[in-house]
Amino acid sequence: MPTESGVRAVTSDALGQAAWSARENARVIGPTKVGVAVAGADGEIITGCNMEHRYRSHDVHGEVSAIAAYVASGRRDLKTVFVAAERDHFTPCGACLDWIFEIGGPDTEVLVQSSRDGQVTRYLAADLMPHYPR
Image 1 (cartoon, one colour):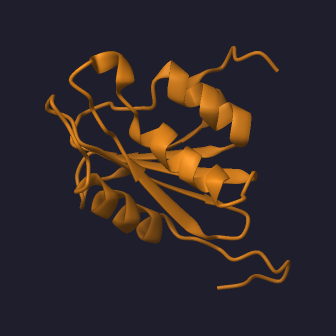
Image 2 (cartoon, rainbow, N blue to C red):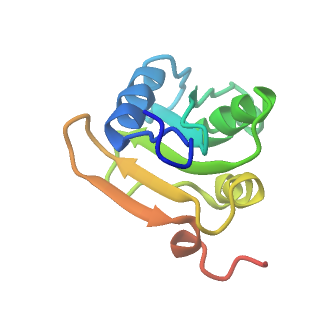
């Protein structure tokens, strides 16, 4: 739905549904499937999931998967990242936060949910990595 500024608003519910759906496509060796949905100013939702490789150094985290697809679609104004993973106190790792800062910035909203119907915890990227170089 467009706002007065012409920017389409995206709800955390829509992002959550997209992230949980993307999580179903995760390719994992370990126990944690991760689905991620990202959106920018235009409100378009792009998803990604983690892909684990038998040579673990080749693993792709869900956040990086979604952000790479976002950039590949021609976008550069990341505003929100929604992470769906069935783990308590799960947040993006430092490497994923590097990408969140690079494409979004310190004010990028990071939403985390550990179950489909669970509480959504909200952070800013700066909350999760307060001493990130600016």
